[in-house]
Length: 414
Image (cartoon, rainbow, N blue to C red):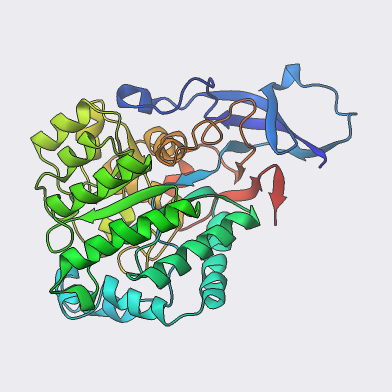
């Protein structure tokens, strides 16, 4: 693999010491940079960078990329997605426009159960093809790492099918991927009157089997009224802890009833959504190592409250932002629009949003030792912008790509 030398970088952003794994509070306002910089990539790693006046000689068989008037920063780290799914739910989109709520659509047989029915009837190879197309789309928009959840299978065979697809996507090595088992996404129709039976299936069969096969990095639960209650969620999180599997949790999307406290008690790596937030929730998060993952484009698409990012930051709670790419509530994985929405609707500054989408996103996936910042010996997953005057143009020009090139694993992506 040839060495790559980026020269004349207008500003090289997110330059960090290797000891920094995430930022929070007032630290989120700072996005460290070097003006007029160079960066060297070798064997898929960042091996050196600095000011141009310290740039080494270019006669060492470098492939040179002139980044004059361009910014360079780490690729986006999308720590919450459901990108492996079948088909779409555009009909439900119209239903919502006509006035039905997310909950009403679910009660009418739509929502997660609709996606599960589609996926169960889709072959693994077809599911892989659909998912690979989406992965290629998000790579083009600057994403270099993504967490992918199951949860549209809702039976042993189909959850395994989703995990197989995620593994095959991992093996392509085009993007860094973490897999999350979310069998506890909803209760299947056949278990409507036997919820304990489905819980037993998750705990006694799915988790042990999938874990032994090395198919899961995290466990997740949709802890929400009408889905998994506190007792059911606790049972799953406790079992995951016994097996040494880290947890994440969908929580406080529509209600706050103790899910955050439960997640903190079980040392969950992240709590995701938080559109509804109470003082008690803040209290528990402040005294924890749990990252709050906010999903602004889900709020945009559903027309619901946005998570109170300013309150979380003021209380020194670390936040990440992610796409929640899924067919029902956020059918887009474009992290540039996620960043723009976070700035416009959640009042994050550009620096806060980029920190939330890079270094904090990497931490949310357990990847902060490899990705998320410009740090020597981290993987060379980079974004080279078009010619822009300011980094603020990324959120400002919503819907317009300001990305010129993407580098993943030290390779330039066409």
